[in-house]
Image 1: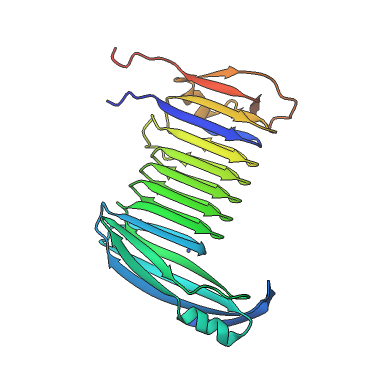
Image 2: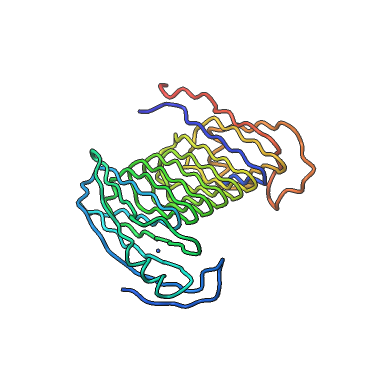
Length: 292
């Protein structure tokens, strides 16, 4: 039996609440000097055995990952080109290509595009299906990341976009700027960090009771639902905000079997209904004799 102590870190600047995804042409109005838009969709695939890794990076565009029982990596890429004229937008979209490169056990998906000229832009959105036993390394700017059903480790970073994950069984490190992070039905260790956005993390009911959890946000709230019978040392702090724990709650009752709450000092803010107010607290694990 694994008796290692778990770790939980919560840091925020607003209140924290602890609850233990063809071609067609489109013409639109002027947007930053872009008047015409041309969209193109392409599909590419490559072999990818379970236990391998997948890596990709976009500049403008979203990334959606769906893990399934397969031995291939299939990508549907939606290319959106904008330019002052329709002809220029279509020409730009048609020279964009998706290329696969391998490095050891890692499959890398690269976007081949020219250096953009003034008043032109390209957005590439990836919809990816691959083996659920795949390590992920994802980076994007000006787009969100959505990950579903992955059992291996996940690294994902985005700027100006949110991060959403469901059914992650392995360790996950997710970071974003100017976006929200939401993880549900998770069962592995998590390290979540965001600026100007909130964090929501909900563990599956069958998740192990000892998980390392680190949640940090600036200018956002944190909501966490821990695994049942969660056992950990917890530290939480906030700047310009408050920290609350639920009162008279079934989650609280079950978790108080293994967790003590120590109050540090008061706050003048009004707590939500049915909550006890904390401004800064530390939860210490009760030492239990698991061998006796």
